[in-house]
Image 1 (cartoon, rainbow, N blue to C red):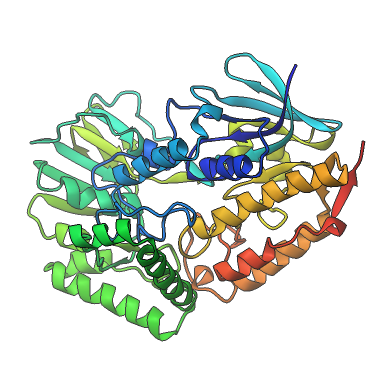
Image 2 (image 1 turned 90 degrees about the vertical axis):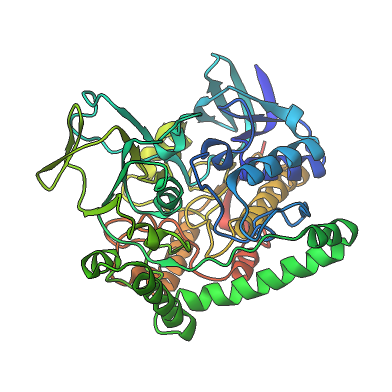
Length: 482
């Protein structure tokens, strides 16, 4: 049976980051498995109209791979996908990837993981780095009548190539970050646009200038200019994101004020304006940014409908007992958080399924490991996404996993299994910090479960998170030696 030192699952931004770090550390007996035909993850899968990042481009990139070619402040999706592909090529990790191959199961056997892929191959690995991400499985609602609707229906991640919406009657189900990008982009193309909203979302104004040719040339010829820009962005976003997520701070109240002003300027119908205005704090849910979203609802062919979709018919859908005929239904309904537990048959010590381990609550050791799942390292795991750029937590996670793999080799350790007591301590730390943020102030979101337990976000600074992962504390693990 083929044996690896490390298997990486997934070749999105986090998987490529882990692969690069492993290569730089000289850990060569590795393999990356990717279910699709190319790298890119989120930015490969999401190609709907208007897709873009909501973090500045020069901050939403690897610190070790600055990109002078970003076209604007917030990069559109295709540019980010190109960036991931370029990094995989430039750092020489593309040849380590096996494409069109899904890992179907991974079972811990004494001192190693035994894995099986979708091609029927079995192999083992001392360690696994899961780079599946926290949000990649589409949350497609199970609605009565989906099998009888005669038009086109799809989740936003499955936007059909070449789809022409000209003159079509289109329904968009959902009003989260994805819908905020899609709705303004298609409104002028369609004959009629119906937007079904269960709960409104705050949308702040978007400052998104293009980088001039002169600025990009400066970035190319003077790398220090990019470093300064990234440093300035980091300092600004780091301090502002903390204050923005605390109720009553000046930046929090001003952000909500600007969003309310944008509604007032953009929407002439007071009923529609009221329906678009949330009743929770600006950052209770993840706020979005757009200069066009609210104004779209002042167009004659756009209708906002409050309420969920009850069922589909042959010609459309039903909401609040009312039938609506449409040609196309777009489900902008987000993703299932941490679906690693159901996408892979993952079994730890004594055959414990991860789905059972997380049945009551999704917990972790410092977001990067799980009790009784030895040598399994998580990228963007529970509480492993911060308040600003995901790259600010992603890189420390990859560094931690690589250092752990190196430490096991140097110390003659077969397995690291985090102790439950330290999982519990980390969990208490996260929940205590979460109480001080706006995320627990009057709303529900994918950030927390129905009880208000935060299983998603690191609710403090990126500097604090890096400090959390700065050292590998062997005393916090049960160690296995040959």
